[in-house]
Image (tube, rainbow, N blue to C red; front, side, top):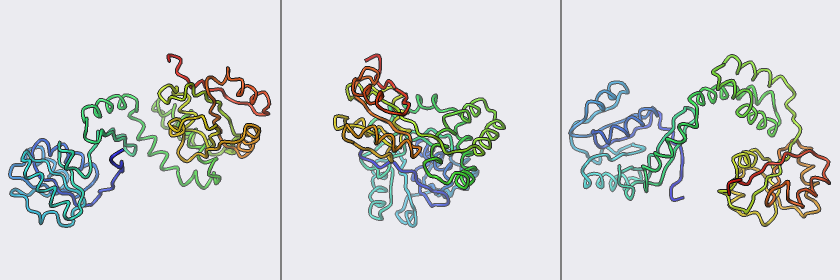
Length: 321
């Protein structure tokens, strides 16, 4: 990863765009959605940019670029068809420690504008680091079809309940489990049906229930230790886990696919069952990573036979491999 993916709040922050043509237009359209205070400087400013200037109170400067325009700016975009001018803007911005994007010239960019899927407040950004922007857009098209339009509305509704949920469910783990059920269960299903009254009724009903849930354990088979062979169901279980129980044979690439803030432990074989049981007693979700298929793995079968808990076996191996 040669760039740090971050989301920058630009509302009311001054931003300079050098260039007023169709290339600059795409960047300006994106900036307008952020609420930034935009200044555009160019000898020629296209009608579309002029229209945006009226709608979003953009300052237009007809004339030459001057380095004095960089004063107090947070970001700069150089989007002209003059390579020498673009690189002059980049050099001036670098001297003042201002992040600059030179359109279609990644070597001179301090930041990159990715392909964006906007379901505000959910925003997905896909970048190739400037190496293959067309490929990034192709992946954007795939993800667009996977993310329903109602995603943003459900996220906003969840935000409106955050304080109430925090006051009602004081235990952190139970609260996280509530949100997992919120976005994976009947509430999300109602959102998919556009039944927003039903969504709110289910939220209130769920909050009035006893939210201290019993823990659960998933036995996930990792096959031959190759991440690309894991099933979606396995990946979902790994992202739910509060505790990951594995051995030293599990590859780091597999571990990287688990929830980042989950605890990872490598217990001695004779303490695996008690480790899992203690986590379940705390109401946690446990994922036990085992080689091959859990149902056919003698060691996992031995653990299941000795344990006093019920477990869900997840076949994490892609059956097509």
